[in-house]
Length: 401
Image (cartoon, rainbow, N blue to C red; front, side, top):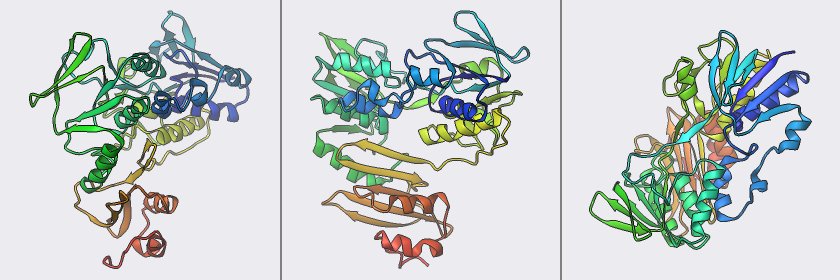
């Protein structure tokens, strides 16, 4: 009977565990997580902040599910070392656990920018349910929030607390919102819609320091302005959690490097999710973590499975705003494109064309045809193959040959 150890109990780790259990009903599966709760849908944390969901509402597997599937989960337990020669992992309590095949799925960690005052009371990051709980406790008496970072998570989290009555200001070093998911024209539409909802923005500027004064916080900007607030969210993105991988000497580039089978540079050691780089690409998105976890689990169980990549797709979950971007969005406007826009209705739709094929898309304010457009982008379909379908979605391709 094979022994499987999975370090990390998020999307990739659970997808692998489910796959292994289906393929090997009698194998031994152990999972370890530093968190004190079972598997939950991390992208729903902003909805949790807003009060749309309670903790149970975004828990994907509870203790009963793991017991039924005979998967042993160790909560609040960190794996501090791996000894590949003896095929054992060492848990935080000092106990050793043997494995035949090991999956590292330690995910990512919140990036904390080097801002003086980042560690004072009232300054938060949002990466776990425990982080969200801490923010909610502070929000009970707060009236204002400053979000440092103009990415998707910062906007979604800010909107969650805005819906609880807080005034929200966003500070971003880029001159436009979502520079990785939007082009300049689309970002203007998005910012105006968010401002109509009550957000204020300070873009193209960085914070100099955060100071505590008379029970409140001052966010002091490099341009000399000061924003007074009750709480601060540092939302500077996430980075792969490489501490354990580095300790055991795995090959690392942008993240842990894996092959198409999700195998690392060590025999019988696999990796998946926000921890890995595949074919030079770092994804950091939930769908990729799920797909990689399933592929890793299948290969660990001896079923040859190739992971070929995942379409880069991002969705902003803010009530009243529909936004999806996928593929190459041509943020700098260098490729051929077709745009539909309606300023009054805050609609901006863009198809990016590269080498006569559909390479990416932005859909803001109107998501009709999303599945057809996603299929075209994912399949890198030629204009000739999808012209009729795209014109049915309202895109005028007459100027493109």
